[in-house]
Length: 251
View 1 (cartoon, rainbow, N blue to C red):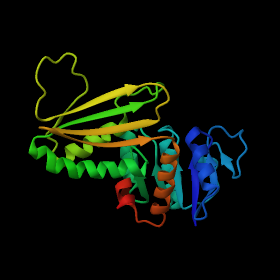
View 2: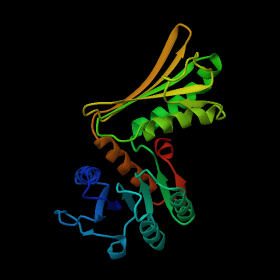
View 3: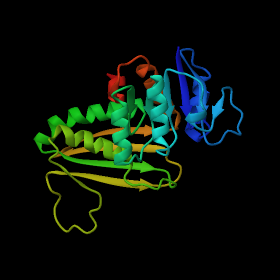
View 4: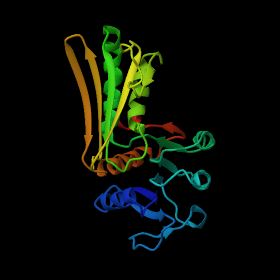
């Protein structure tokens, strides 16, 4: 059994994780940490880690970068692993995370979906073969009309995964409206669409002469991210200190 402390338990994603774990026989939530403690939960909820007196195997963080040091100190002092589902960390935050990973296992991913992380693995393999054959690479991401950032962190993570295996020789192009020139060979175009209630869609296009290969992932609900976080928590339970990613989970 994997005992979990859920940070951000009363947020949207926290509630989805709670619902899924209510039906899970191999993992359970033993405590929550959330600035909102008014809601009824089946487990104790604390406003901060300083007030939390419950031990666990893993922390799942679906909160925000705020007060990251408090969580890291709590986890290091108790030898608890952390699944970081939060983005937007500063360089100072990232340094704190790296330092903590010397003492505890930490899994961090820009997207917790198992499917997206499998896509990242596939596009790496495809890029190695297709880029050298002259294929152009484009990424199109679609999200709901409330999303404030563009491109998505997942689109950038996919671009980085491709660029890494291509020796970081490619430049990202986000807007072609002011460019009056043919597409350059070493470009990865990244386009963003915002509309309606689209949960998330990411498409990687490899366009060659007379043929096109498309690798696409579509999210129909936020539950896929919660499922991935739970799978990551089970994976991290009992692991040695260090930095891990979802690619370690899917193998």
